[in-house]
Image (cartoon, rainbow, N blue to C red; front, side, top):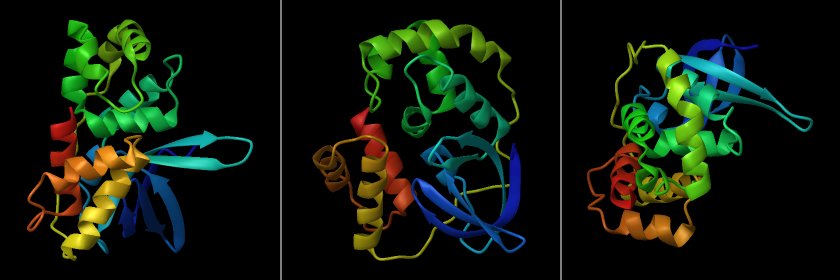
Length: 199
């Protein structure tokens, strides 16, 4: 099992990353919560990982903290929640807000996440309530968001593409992004603000 990687960030196009670890390029998939705290490309970063082995692929998921990875691992053990939906949940809601929704039985907020219907929300609440008590408390250390230069058109297109990859419909994603003043925003900031409008 690959549990942690330390290397140079070569590419980041939500939800995908490319990390150079001593000459080996690892392709990773990460939630937007991790994208928000990634350093600029070319910088060194440490990411916690989870490997999923399927018949047709080996998929490596990356997280900014052990807590985030622990939450992902708990999510994918819930009946009906796979890795893609797990990433969508982590991308659409902060860990603290998710925990509060589960503890308060707030199915309404959970059903606003892409791919989460009423039954899935109810299962999340029932199955995650006890698991959340065992979550590691370590937060995100040594990373901060950096502004990345790029054309507004490029950042808008990337943001819409990332939202679609998370499970939102293309017209829904485009509409949410169009409502924003994207002139001085990075891709990550556009995604974050669009998600806030959709939830």
